[in-house]
Image (tube, rainbow, N blue to C red; front, top):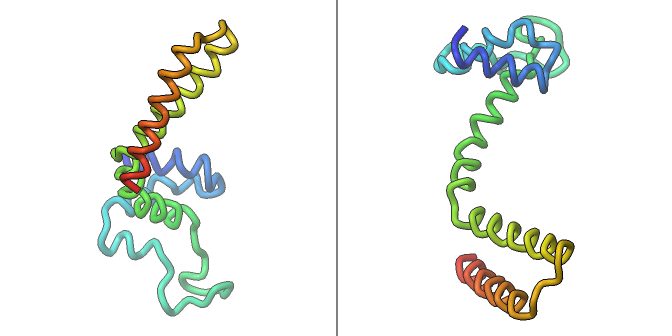
Length: 128
């Protein structure tokens, strides 16, 4: 089984378990693209809720399509400075709270962290 089939089975196991039996074939066809991908989706001649050719719609191709469409957006978000800054500020806040639980922070430490948070807030607002 190829990597597309393996991932399609993983996704089906999580989101569409009733389609697990044919998930590998769907994933491979979706990854192939072209007419094989188009054949996974109902045509214009099918009416929603009707019986007939193409009337049975599998949900897995829709899930794969949604993941394919959001992939570039997620990758751009993961590679952006915004996420890095947000993670940095969050980790500082968590560390500051943890420091208060373990031992009292000195006033100098609190001023340094507060100054850094103000600096980061200014940078985030200037990029927005």
